[in-house]
Length: 180
Image (tube, rainbow, N blue to C red; front, side, top):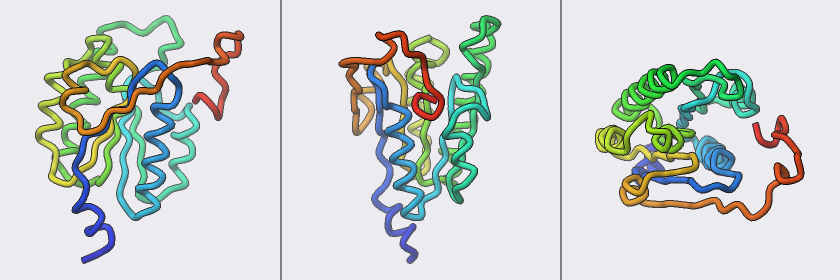
């Protein structure tokens, strides 16, 4: 049995990183980096984020066994419609579902899926239904502020990032390489 197969036997939990503090996606990327370093296959499905603009999307190209698929639009523009967000969120959930059922990846991160639920683009029931169909020994992380109570109750691990102080309060905007 390979080292990956031995490690994979212990996987299968659902983790949630939520809260108003910075660091949810960053924490999941740290976990992905650790998992990848241990020989596990990792996929991050990004809800509500465009492709090819974020630092993690550029960096992941340097790793074997760690992929990112972005399935959203830039919310810093004014031309995003709710209908487009709903359509893209449903497409991302469908893709996420197929990946979880395939067992191709050992760790699957649904980045910003909690936001999609809090914006009512997806329901917690839809997400739980997808999670229930995941291949055995597939670890899952759901990130984003506003995780619904049903998701918190369902998860095995929940971490809340608490905002104590933020540079935005001083008028410092999101910085490339730090916030995105």
